[in-house]
Image (cartoon, rainbow, N blue to C red; front, side, top):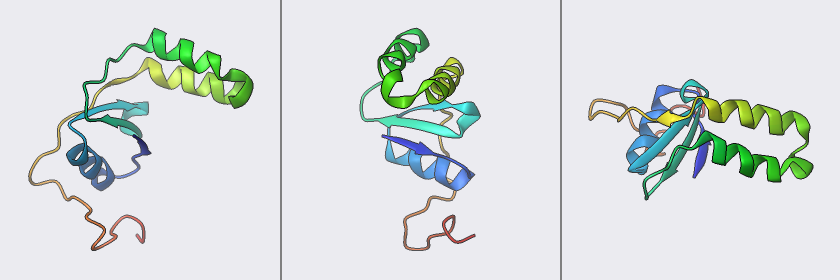
Length: 93
């Protein structure tokens, strides 16, 4: 699963939903999985390149740059505010 993470609430909520999370673009993009994520920028770039005709060169280049900074996400903490959608905090602020 992949999401944009513009706020600490989104990050904490996503981090709690998935046991394994990689972050790109200094945490603005998150990739989550129930299985360990092998962070391998060279392999990811090769897969991105295979889609370049569909994505276009600009998006292909942006995605390739983003994977260079991929790293495991910091864990969330019990005190972090998690959005349960009962109170859609981020969506309406």
